[in-house]
Image 1: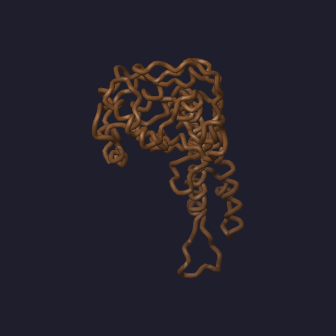
Image 2: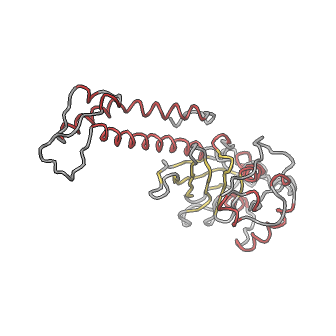
Image 3: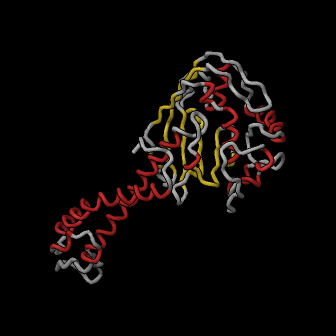
Length: 311
C-alpha cells in the first residue's frame, strides 16, 4: 500500500477501504461461528453465511438465562465484529495516507495537495497557524528540495492517538546537503550554497483527518530530542537556516521581525490572518496585514482560495 501513488482520488480510497473490509469477512464469519459455539448459541449452517439476513434469529437458548439477562443474537456478535473491522480498516488506510503526506508535505518534498482538506491548517512550534493557501505558498517560496537536492526523509510508522482517534503521530529523520542556492521568496536574495550537512534531531509530526479522510491539520518541526543532530535543537526551516549559517533570533524577536512580511506581497508568512483561518484557530491568527487573497500574486499550486468553515 505504501508504494501507491499519491494521486489517488477519494473514490480510490473508498474502494480500497471496501476491499479491506471484504477481504476480512470470510475470517469474520468463522470467528462468529466459533464465538457462537463457545457461548452456547445454536450454530446451524446459516451462521456461516456472510449475509446479515442469514444470521438474524439465531439466539442464545441456554437454560441459565435469567429474566434480567439480555438475549444476545449471532447478528449482534457479527455486528460488533464488523464495526471493529471497519474501524481497523479505516485506521490502516489513514496511516497509509499519513505516510504519503509525510513524504510529500510541501516542505521537504513537493506537496501532495490532493490529500489536503480545504480548511487545512499548519501549526509549528513557532510558525502558525497557517491556512492552506498561505502554507502552500510559504513552503513553496523555500523549495527546500531544490536547495538540498539529496534530502531524504525517513518516516516511522504512524500510530493512532489514544484520545483523538482522528489524529496520527510519527517521528521523521531528515538528512541533506546544501548544494544549491536557498530561496527566501521573491523579495530577499537567495542564500548561496554552503555545502553544509543538514541533520536535525528526530522531529515529531502529526496529521488529523476529517470525515472525508482529508488532512485538516498538520503539526511539525518539533524536535523530540535536542541533544541529537547538528542544528542546535531547531527543526523545519530554522534547522535549514542554522545549517546554512544564518543566525537564528529568539522566538520573541522572530515574531516581531516577521510582522513586516505580513504586509508584503509574495513573502513567506508566519501566521495567517484571522479571517482566513477556520473555527478554533481564528483566535490564534493576526488581525493586521494582508489577507490570503491579497498576499500572493498567483497561487502556485492552483488550489482555489475559499472561505474557511465557520465553527
